[in-house]
Amino acid sequence: MSAQAGKDLLVKIDMTGSGEFQTAAGLRATRISFNADTIDVTSLESQGGWRELMSGAGMRSASISGSGVFKDEETDERARSAFFSAETPVFQVVIPDFGTVEGAFQITTLEYSGSHDGEATYEMSLASAGPLLFSAL
Image: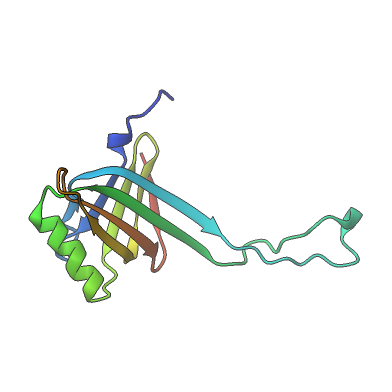
């Protein structure tokens, strides 16, 4: 696999609830993180005193974060309304040469900033709110 351009890691939001996805406009940096909690079942009988984990147990989650500049009123308004109404719209994350992750996410952080001699910027963080589907390329 060759190196991939960061601009190809896309975060898309379902604009209408019917699978009409648009890329969150203006994002310059994006990140997706997958997490899995463990359940420790180590006991005095564990072989060699090594920790043992319960297979298939624990909570799995994903988080998305991104930052960028304002470019598109439509996707900005969709994210803002989802945040203030505590919705969990479906998002897609396109990971170049890997696949697409899709599922419900709640916007947990929405931050706006700007300086007097620069562009207005935003940052947002999302937390998974249900099962995620992965589609390989």
